[in-house]
Figure 1: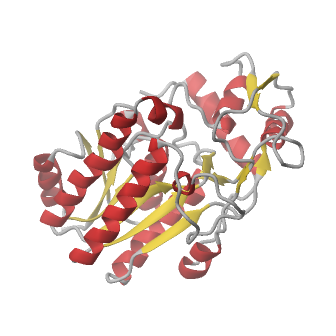
Figure 2: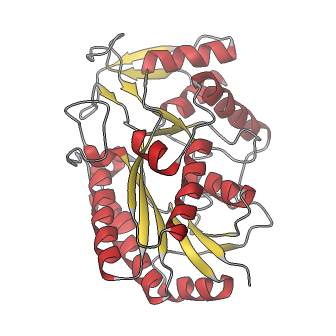
Length: 332
């Protein structure tokens, strides 16, 4: 029987790209998603799909047995930072408590490899940039804390059981599958590039710039944007390394090691669309650092990860193409 990889949250933005990367690399992904924020149409018709919750031990056990699951990629969870501040218990439940249940199911069913969708929010506001993995973790919101708590759980589980893991700390994920097979479909998304291409296509009247007095070259915040397909490729490399080295676990930053300001991103959208976005200047938001840029040397050196789409114009082009596709053929 073919060995399979469980992809939780595989009907979501990043998860659906990981499913494609697994499939393209010859793996057999099995998706579980409760479709609260995901879309059934984001999962290819030939990929087995299980609708349900990751905290359902019976469902997880039955899925592991049915499909001969040997590893899991865990994307299921809540991801909106401001919402985590207003509703922290939702985040500690969805991101921490449910992951604890999933890990229990993994251990009981002898699934020994786990790739975790973590975040640069675990660092909080770093004192220096670029940010490397050993810097202090001081999250400033429940979202970041909920993810850091899961990293602690993973470390403890790996020490106690026949289990290894890779936690990938994402920086700002953007773009869409270059072949147009999936993309970010969430309504009301807060990611800058997603919002900007929506505005460029008339889905929004304008775009807001939150703060123009940061200690950056043009006064707007600088972020490290990573193409979602490069991120998905990192997950496949992580999976293969965990299987090759079952005693080793890893924590890596996933970014490009350089950043773009909000103004530079909006200028790129203007270039790609040959149009001019209406920009509203707003006060800065609490807790936003001046700049957040990854040190990605560790994943490059240890995994040989080589980004293929480290080009802001390309990221915008792929995001725009997906947004146009959603207008013509909405995903459900």
